Amino acid sequence: MSELTLLQGLVDSVHEKHKENQEGAVATYIPALAEADPDAFGIAITTIDNKTVTAGDVDSAFSIQSVSKPFVYGLALEEFGIEAVGRHVGSEPSGESFNSIELNPDTGLPFNPMINAGAISVVGMLYDALADKTGDRILRLFSELSGSDIRIDESIFESEMTTAARNRALAYLMQSTGFFNAPVEEKLASYVSQCSAMVTARELSIMAATLANIGTHPSSGNAVYSPLTVRQVLSMMFTCGMYDYAGRWALDVGLPAKSGVSGCLMAVVNRQIGIGIWSPRLDGYGNSVRAIAACRDLTEELGLHAFEFSNRGSSILSMYIK
Ligand code: GLU
Image (cartoon, rainbow, N blue to C red; front, side, top):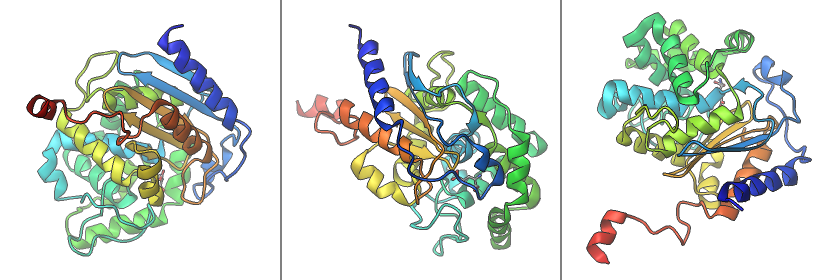
């Protein structure tokens, strides 16, 4: 039996185990998200040598929402460098909800790029450089990462724009402190647009596999991100990627991950696999109930936790101390 057949068996059994779980509720604060099929559930794993194993609804599209944040943050790091990006967004967990109307009192900046304020600030930097080409640049990035032609869903975009009071408040708050320039409305629209890009669980796992593969796309071989960018992005995901559940997630699962309010979850196993899971019912933190449960089981079965006892640590250090 090949290794992939074994992995397929595991993914099938994890999907089967959680399929009937109906806990949680679909997000409704963006009205269009309420239309998602609550029973949809797909799990996809893509290896860094471009093999994909799936179970369930892995080819149905959903809006990427906050899972766009690490990818766009990576793009800004590539375009402007760590130092310049660091003048627009910090790198500390906020301890507040993802859409909290608050900046770090010590720096006046958003706490990190995984919460809304940080992501709006980051896309604002791109807007300063690209203006009305920002949206196309981001879709080109998502298309390159997924290997598919990624588009936005206009009805989700419109739905979020008409209910974006909190994000609008955040954007104007940032403008008032000086590091976030006009045009505020256009920058807000760029953020909402990146969240409205439609992907599938299969595509998400391929996008995650580029991060697992230190920035090189598993099938095209294109270097989308530098290794340093990937290290920065994965570190942010590890500490801040799972809303107010990030600490517990680090303990229980121990993988860099990002979730989104459409019920998607992306996790990365360094140098091995990207994971994409979608199931729209959310828990109280805004994380997908079944995605969390499935990812926890996969981690347990495959020994994926970053601090798993079998993890041998730095191969460079081992040359010095063997
Ligand atoms: N577009 C959503 C918002 O800004 C993204 C939230 C999320 O997925 O965490 O509210």
